[in-house]
Length: 571
Image (cartoon, rainbow, N blue to C red; front, side, top):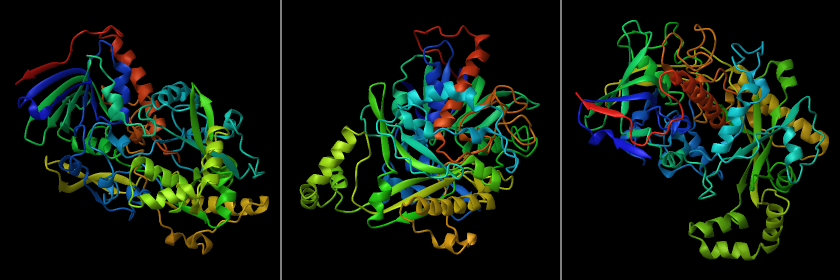
């Protein structure tokens, strides 16, 4: 990786590239990888560095005037999830964004699933539903994204059953009500157990046509006098260094909040902001409202975990594991005007769980070394059965748990009043903070409640344990429901054919602004219920393919350059 730090460069330097990518997270790094080794000069601009820095992270501050939220990262810790870093414990809602090379991949656990066919279709009961793309158009890009993430086959519905080493039991659940849904987890090949960190993928880019510029915060997008073409970017560093980047093409990869904020704040030529002729930038803010749907305790845990756990398959020489859950069927969504949502199992391991004890011993963490050794010694039968399940049957490990619950993530219906605007408060560079007014609507709450009731009824009907439902569902008191955001902001610069309801076209270029493109979850036309990383990478790869065609007429494509090809000039 060829990297420069703006803080060590002369003040007022001018930088020239063919494509400037704003944001060194998954989307930006994925696009840069697609251009490695070509004759097209790529500059990736990252606000932070290679490590966490509190001073830079403070630039993620927002003014939150919307839903009162519990932070997803805080909730994740103590729930058996790995990957949430200690310094994230007390971050307020919508500030769980990482200003460092690798972006949000530093705090995810690698959970992946593709959007399903329902997410792409026009659903008359959901306003502005339907994508300008068909799902089948993205299948090749999903495969390429899956390879980048070291995933197995991109199968997330019951078509996966036939590929699994040990097929799940047929529970005889009514397919008109519930459908199987799976997630898989992206891990680095080395070290294998660690979720994929895109900062490491950036290190793998050794081509001399790709540069990374760190500690460089974009403060303004510059356009021509009529605002119909992008021309350059203004940059600033924490020690007062500034720079200007000139590029034929600029791609915003800053995430669901920052992409919108930057367009709105770049108002030197267009008072309403760039791409905002119809007051759409920042509207339709979605996340994935998450809550606990139902729970099981005691002996019921093992009965449920037998069916809803990890299932493995062999693919390209590796074993890949998929987590089995449940989703609302398209039929019931259509019949009752519901949004797409799915529930997945979460086990809370007991202190005397042998596998948790082994993990602590392996990592050298915890203060109960003797206790962990005794736990393992007293659980030899459970460990032996677990090894057989894992290595022979390719199944998830059996755990000694105090609770198993199903958590749910729901698709949100688009709401134009759920939005990002500019705050009166400003950051250290004098730029307005994002003012966030996230709204959770009636359709998503109704969908979550309906899924819980269907699971309860269906489990009872087929002889599975009946779950314990939350009080608000039993009492039918929607106002008492508690949701958290999942740090999955999306749809704020949504893709569409109509400029009155979208910000970018089907090729991800901002309507009416030549050369300005956007990648990431902010361009999702609708948010789906699945974790966004896999889908945003597929769209980023699709955009890279489009930009290759766009730049072919300027430079011969796929010609390797032997020396750095970025130009730097001091003004």
